[in-house]
Length: 445
Ligand code: LLP
Image (cartoon, rainbow, N blue to C red; front, side, top):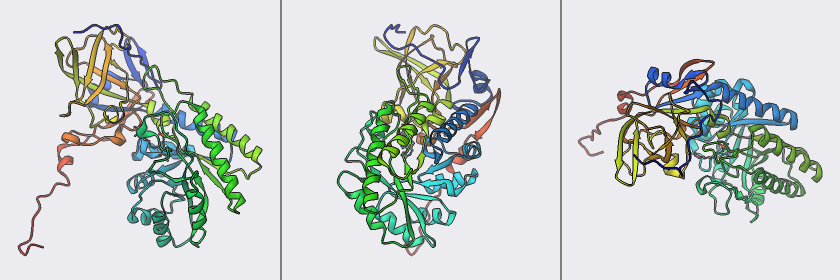
């Protein structure tokens, strides 16, 4: 086994996780005991962390910018229970598909507080959203505007997604406002202005505002300030054309800790900073204060999540590296293979023991690229150890698949030392539920 002094030592305790007697504790529950009770791989979700963070956002905005709504970005983690937790705190929701909308409504989200995003909503989705009484569409194409107009029986509120052209420092696939982005209408080349003007011709389209989202896992508050400057300039321009902007949606994007080098601001700092900056900017420019919408996803649920795995095969490639393979992989966490995302991990019952052995944590999918952590120092591992990775509450369950016909792991909620399913485990029958042997009729039709 290779000993190495240069790889980072695992740094635990993101979110509200703790170590007691060398054991990792999440939401008051012993992680190794959860693994024993529910099996692995297992997503564990700390309810209090998510609720605390969401409530902090709502309170900060109430104080700094009362004309506002915090919408939870469903794509980060979508299941019925999350809306049951967040809707009572006053949050609305950002959804991007009929499926997310259905789940949000099932979880008790008020449709009037739902913003329907997405660059290519289908006609069926548009119709379903209108019939459900969705408050706002965030329009991303003229095709979509036509579809809304075709189905809306009463004037439908819409915002337009615009591209303010801000390059936030994040992975290129999670940046969204580069000039060649598929999202939004460019402010710089005049497209945004002309599509907003063209919307005036529909008598069942009620233009209420503009939206942007500059990227995700952003650490610099300046990125948001630049976006606010550009959005406010654009509002001034629209006002000069006689168009009022009632709502300004600034999207999400606040960063979280995945590894020790990540230095995000606190959720409160991100939110308060941007809200104050906008309030000052609106006052300086003498424009009507728009209703402000923020759509945090990752920063509400990311650090609430821990994933538990069982270590299986341990294999040393002589003079090169030692793989410790776990029972998860890219089917339950595709982020390392998609974005080179980095994670940290601990052994659940040796969480603060000396980490002197270097491993690559491999997943179980049939792909060489299925590596969850490429180089981490841990205590010497043995098969059967429970490994815990941090900050897995956002874009893990929601991006999971049944690749290689593995099960999407269940989600167990933890709170004050208690645990219960939030998403149940799948079964082999679930995997074949929709399988059919095609039967072709005799006449060939
Ligand atoms: N609003 C809009 C319009 C968005 O497109 C997004 C994320 C959000 C809000 C929420 O952003 P957040 O606060 O979570 O950063 N799968 C990638 C992240 C893609 C994010 C896409 N849009 C990942 O795993 O990092």
